[in-house]
Image 1 (cartoon, rainbow, N blue to C red):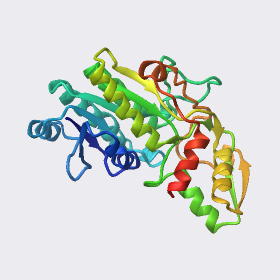
Image 2: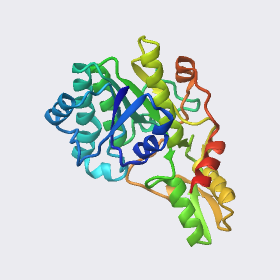
Image 3: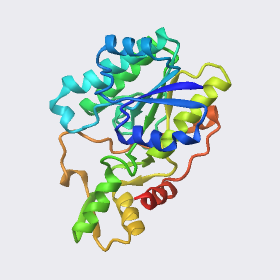
Amino acid sequence: MKNILVTGANGQLGQAIKKVAADYPEFSFVHTDFNELDITSEEAVRSFFAQQEIHACINCAAYTAVDKAEGDEDTAFKLNFEAVLNLANVCAEYNAQLLHVSTDYVFNGRQNVPYSETDDANPNSIYGSSKLRGEAAAIGSNPATIVLRTSWLYSEFGVNFVKRMRELMQEKDSLNVVFDQTGTPTYAVDLANVMLTVLTKVWNEPGSYGGVYHYSNEGVTSWYDFAVAIRELTNASCTVAPITSDKYPTPAQRPAYSVLNKQKIKDTFGLQIPHWRESLKVCIQQL
């Protein structure tokens, strides 16, 4: 039995892991959030590992308030950089595998072909900068760390685009949604399964797996088309109109294009990835 520490367990990805946990009877999960484990304290993390037999850590904890981060840089870096380094250091000491979740926001979005793991990262925002520094610190401290960059995460848990659109479409007759930002939605339950599949292979087929990987669902869309698909699947009568990003200004600049190339993770771990539309149907049915 392998014991897996899940940080940020009350967030949508942490809750997605709880949902699929029963499908992995070979794993025992230790779910924590800030009240149980302050990962911004290396001493607290080391003490926790000393008391528990931890074989792997999936770090779902993060400062994800993208716009708020523009005025709260210290907190963003504390959670997205310093805390990640703490986990990487302690995982290295205890020979535990670290899986850390990162983001498409590490890219500036000026590319027009899907981003691979070797493309230059040049974030536009404090959030993206803090996440990029966390990646580099974790791998620099502990080269066995596996970083999974993902994009446009949604689920039946927490606060996310799908749930918000569904609510607004029930309340309003019309909505405006940006159409000039392109990427790929990721269903958190799919990502949860991928992370546990990755851990299974790491332990069953020992090798050198450390480094950065990209994962999202398959396909490409805009936020506008994503919203239209939600409207269709929920049978909402709300009108959805496309607008440009300048009509909906935000404190943090979003990448205009953040499609991720997933060939590396597919080849390395033998994954077949569902299309975003198929996974969206599953999520809507759960809601």
